[in-house]
Image 1 (tube, one colour):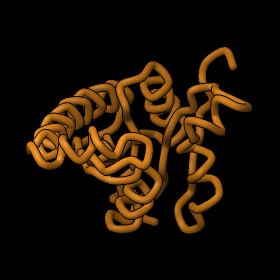
Image 2 (spheres, helix red, strand yellow):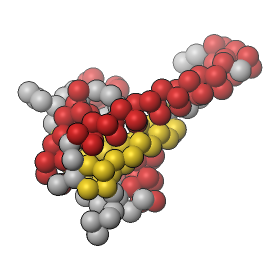
Image 3 (cartoon, rainbow, N blue to C red):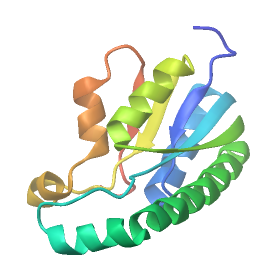
Image 4 (cartoon, rainbow, N blue to C red):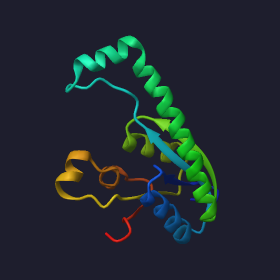
Length: 154
């Protein structure tokens, strides 16, 4: 690793993400960074086949993707501002896809020196039902150091 390799800061606009960026700045000493916001493209669901088919047929699925991409770009820009306040020389980046896959692929492509993300403090059934990006990354991130910052007060 060299100091020119960026830190990948996972940012979703939450208080937990802001806290993780700030902690990452203190622990990693700033430097180059990417504030990454991941949005999930519209996809068919087994639970609502009729509504999803109508959304795709009418073009609403594509419209949803366009709006989600724009919102993610705005969040990434906000994340880069938070990162600059924390001492990083940050640039925004928004990408669509499954969060774990996008985060890992981006970290590898950009030769990230670390990945930083916060947790929501969910546990038990809620985490199992809603999923946990931090847990997925802990299980699948093998080649990039991972800093998972717990939610304040958890």
